[in-house]
Length: 111
Image (cartoon, rainbow, N blue to C red; front, side, top):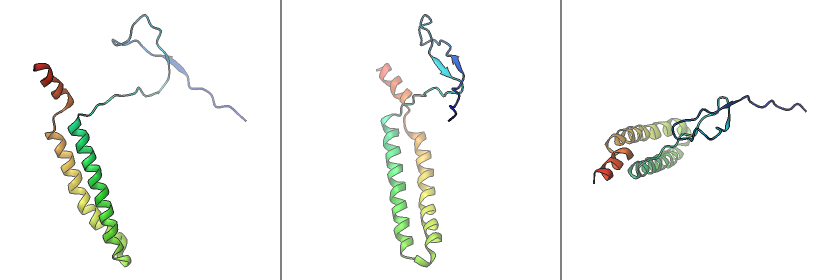
């Protein structure tokens, strides 16, 4: 049974956050660096609301389509897409009106 070769390693370059005296860990070439993103509470609430609406619309479209078994697929798509598109558009545009985490932190610093 052949063994898969290990990916080549390269040394991670020190950055401003790391101590230059520390030996950087070995990282496989092409390995993605973890990206830390934090959402503000209003963005998390918006995300939960949009996801809940999409699931409710999916359930509604399935139940309406089940009432028309001879044309189930077209009815499902017609109902689901007509409900989904406005929800996604409003969810995307609502992001513009919510304060960002950086703006909230700047307001706290100013106070």
